Length: 414
Image 1 (cartoon, helix red, strand yellow):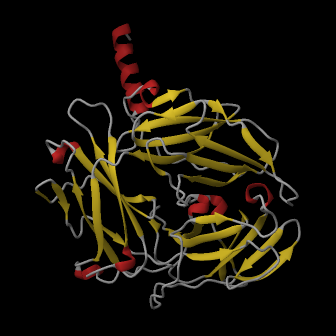
Image 2 (cartoon, rainbow, N blue to C red):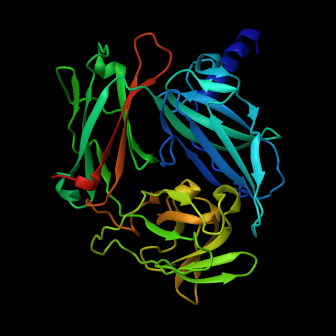
Image 3 (cartoon, rainbow, N blue to C red):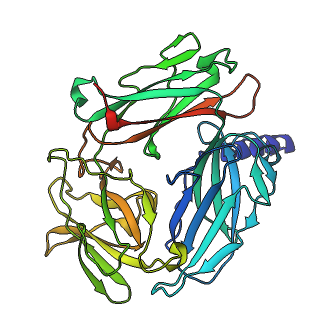
């Protein structure tokens, strides 16, 4: 192969690698309780340029090993942008996380790590999609998390309506919104502006590439029905282990062996039940404990036991317990097993003390994930929707975020 041909092949190999979509990578089993947030309690940072984001996680090996962080800037489709690091970062990444402490008087020892951005080593220069990556001292990627940075340059307003599709009247919610570009120069909105709509910060069901339906003065109008619709799902199930020794509405009994074991009451299939409003935090979790003042270091890890009746709807498919606490992952660790004697699916998970939302999902034989067969779909369900507005001017090398909007289905209209 000639040198010129080798150069061309190498160029395309580099391009194909760099263009890979930056999916979130979930951690190995020793890393737990990844808390990643901005100024609000929502554990997905959506921050204005210059605002602080915080990452916190535990390493159950408790040997104070070194971890390092890197930051990747991405375009609208979550592929790495063409910007150089010096163009989107002021300072240097690939720095060691120096803020960490060991747990105090816990049955399960762990090391707790904290990282804030911006810090003395680094700050972000531009808006857009970002990925934060955490590496161990051997240079192996341990996990990664997405976050977004924006400026308030356009205004976004919206409502959530009941679907007008007769087939999904009682199951779907529709997000309708408008973008007011007054004071911001937009020449060709259909080419320069893109939007993404995310339900409860859950990226796998996010909607992309939706053009404005029409323009009214300086407003871009999105009044679709099918194109901006989501299944409503149901309110998340929850439990609270802040008090290690006391049962409550969700916990049937507690045992103490190597760790505390919290056995939850058996859940049921809710897809054939009437919808009942029960306040949740849309899949999120909050670490808290009554056994200490420093939640990060004094909260215990307990073994939480989940159970669900086996039915024909499950068949030979796999059932998983998911929530923001495990980043909605589908892995062996949170896969339920069948207890033939009891006739039910069971799972035991080590989880740090606190208040947690969770739900059951089914992985079908074809590999598809059935999110709502166990919980059901209802248009009444309270969900939060985030609208991200991206902008790329002619000749620009990256997608910036010029505005966000947040709407809730609590006051859904027909």
